[in-house]
Amino acid sequence: MKCALVTGGSRGIGKAICLRLVEEGYYILVNYRSNVDEAEKTLAEIRSREGQGELLPFDVADKEQVRLRLGGWIEANPSRYIEVLVNNAGIKADALMVWMDDEQWSSVIRTSLDAFFHVTRLVLNSMLLRRYGRIVNVVSLSGQKGVAGQTNYSAAKGGVIGATKALAQEVGRHGITVNAVAPGFITTDMTAELNEKEMRLMIPVRRFGLPEEVAHAVAFLASPQAAYITAEILSVNGGLYS
Ligand code: NDP
Image (cartoon, rainbow, N blue to C red):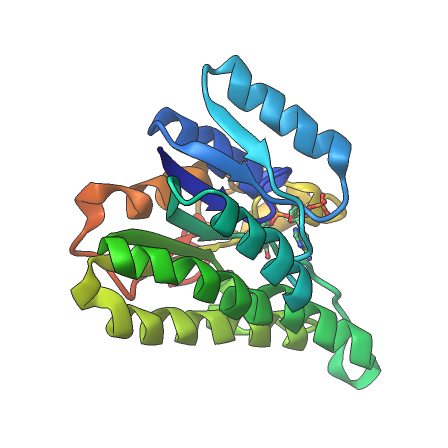
């Protein structure tokens, strides 16, 4: 059975990606860190759409948990393999750099950049053996442009953009593509405190994006038909930055 792992798949953009990949017939591994209720709701929605999947909680920022939980799942399920990996889990901890503490810096780097390394390395092995895989990293406009108050987040996402391009060159000949989707402002819990009415004026399409619009871009890059697209960063930002 073909599987897709979506990190941070329980809420927001990750949830929309899970529901979109169900339409492509994937068995969905819904990763999350702590909010069991939301994760269970997402799994129930997957099932209500005649899809299949399971919850796979672990903290992507904790390499031991990744090794034990994700590595354990891979070992326990030799007949299944993760054909699509979406590195989506992310947090922000904004502050001007002069006020930023060590934990604000390292928690954001661990959750996006270190997690990309620890999760992808584990999943890559079986993709290489089967000579097929789709890896899509959810980055951000912040990692492309740099945003004041987000040196940690811009560094983390910018790092993943560099890693996307590098890994794509390593594994392209093995049938594996590695791409990223870079959202602008998307309506989720992460942007709940932002004033869309004011901020929309600086966005050419005059609104925040929907999680489903990011999910559509991810599903495109994850499709077998996107085999000749790799090392690409696809912006989903309403024209805010290119
Ligand atoms: P949300 O805050 O709405 O959801 C975050 C999801 O990630 C939840 O499922 C959460 O699980 C999970 N998560 C957070 N930390 C961890 C962790 N350490 N281990 C495992 N799971 C974790 O975020 P969004 O949907 O808005 O963002 C998704 C991605 O898109 C992020 O990478 C974000 O940086 C990026 N992005 C978002 C934008 C936006 O405007 N919303 C813009 C650009 C990029 P739990 O509920 O258990 O904590």
